[in-house]
Length: 141
Image 1 (cartoon, rainbow, N blue to C red):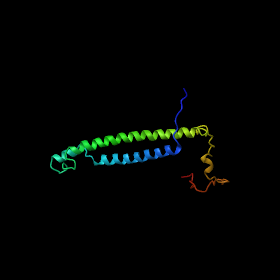
Image 2 (image 1 turned 90 degrees about the vertical axis):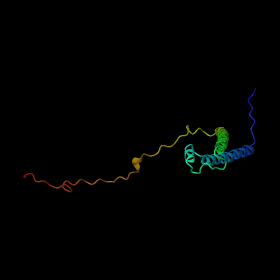
Image 3 (image 1 turned 30 degrees about the vertical axis):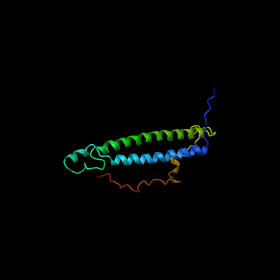
């Protein structure tokens, strides 16, 4: 039996990929917002001393379970959309490899010129002066 893969039309696949990207971004923003809304574990200690933080919208314990569950659901959706985007990227990479382009590892890259040629060099060297910069010391002292 031949392995025949049903190929979606290019426009439908592109539209589906766009939908997955939009859902992925919205879920990512939702996860960030929900994580920022949740209290840390150390915040309960301040509430026991009367800081007023225990009066939340969902009650003292109700918000923790609601927000943590909703964060877990969004994290799962984020994971699934990440896998979907990886699948789309793999398909696009396969399509590019089947286009007849050579493998980038096989391409010849011209050798770059060494950096020594970029340094300016004097055309002619001047002869060194024997008595120019050095002070003379008398031998008799």
